[in-house]
Image 1: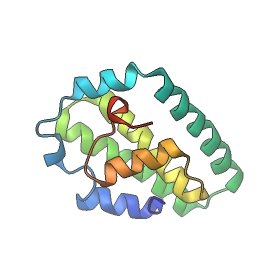
Image 2: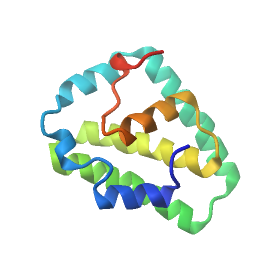
Image 3: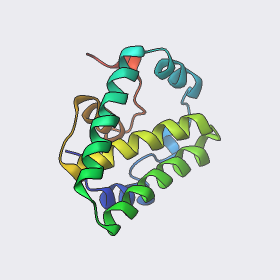
Image 4: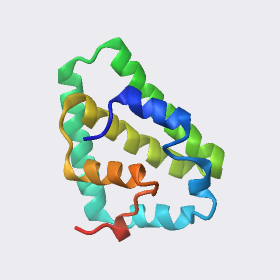
Amino acid sequence: MPPTPQALVDQLRGGSLLPAALFADLDCEAILDARDSDPAFETEWLAARERLAAKWKASRPGRATSAALEDARRESFLAVSSATGQHELSSYVSDDFELIAWASAVGDVPPVVAWLWESYASGAIPRPDRRGR
């Protein structure tokens, strides 16, 4: 299970998630190409987003949880953008962190979200072309 939205924010701000060194030799275009060229991944990701968005809305999260979720999105975007200058990748990562925060907040972690979290937690940017299905 991913950490709470606030714990995600704390890890992002503390540099233990998405540290600048992670992006030193990263081929951003290869990651973008891998995500954009995998329809099965996109389908699974979008289904998880739809499911978690509905659960998030139904859960009526409090102000602090909602703010932490927005902070996790912003902090993840800024970490990637600062390290790479690549705004498309920053947006993908930010969207991933929204899913991860939703999953944690509602207590439902679809397999694709578990894989995303495991990738980020282990210090890697998720690449569908390297995912065992």
